[in-house]
Amino acid sequence: MLQTYIEQHKQRFVEELLELLRIPSVSADSNHKADVARAAQYIHDKLKQAGADKVEICPTEGHPIVFAEKIINPSLPTVLVYGHYDVQPPDPLNLWVSPAFEPVIKKQVNDQAVSVAQAVEQLQAGYKIFARGACDDKGQVYMHIKAFEAMVANNALPCNVKFMIEGEEEVGSDHLGTFIKDNKAKLKADVILVSDTAIIANDTPSIDVGLRGLSYLEVEVTGANRDLHSGTYGGAVANPINVLCQMIASLKDANHHITIPHFYDDVIELSQAERQ
Image 1 (cartoon, rainbow, N blue to C red):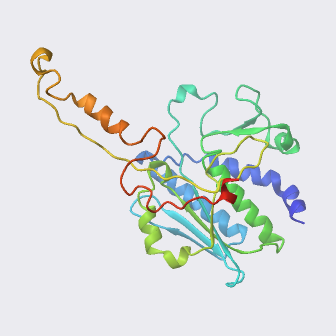
Image 2 (image 1 turned 45 degrees about the vertical axis):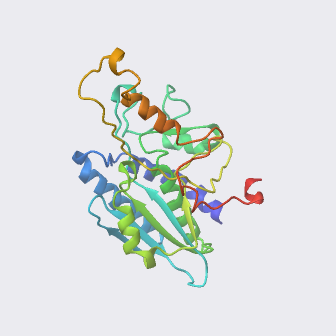
Image 3 (image 1 turned 180 degrees about the vertical axis):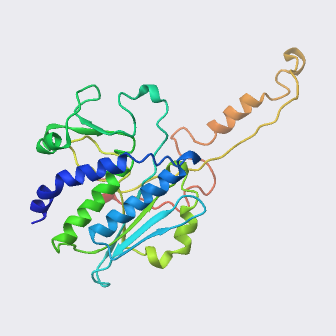
């Protein structure tokens, strides 16, 4: 039944995704603030139409977060789907073969575009959607929404599902942490499902089981306020460039082990089974 539902509705699925891709929800550009809000509303409406019992747009000090849930049985596991509806700026514009927010369907970047109907008829033939956000991350977010819709429509949902779709991932998710801390009970789940990752190849389903974080630091090394004569001062007064090189090099040893004290204190060791 699920596959039949998908076959019956797949052209609508693609057309709805194209509509979402046409929204220039560039979170880094304040000129697109209304577009970002429009994308949030679009996600909200589609989650509601897909069968979520509770859907809301949650304001933050930046761009809003869309939350939705369907609890079919509190005793069952809960999956929290995370994604983002904002996109990177399309610059440099001259590198786009077609406009970033006018999605087209074709096999390769320089091929002739085809209609949705043509592409849907030949989905296994390697057609792709070319547009900003098609794979980061509107395409993946919409895949989850449509999978959710298909399961709800066929009474095939095996667990509780929650969605947390944010609008600031491309600018550092500045307000996501606060939202999570303030809504721990609402967001409680057994598994978090993220599809803003990589795949081995287009025809190879891939599952990432862990994600690394980032730490941004700014280091300032102060040296002399003027050029120093190398014959007089060379070797005695450190060159800031050399000091920076030494600092960076000292962060890892010869085996690429990070030497920062306590860096590994909270790192969970992979089991042999996980490594295999």
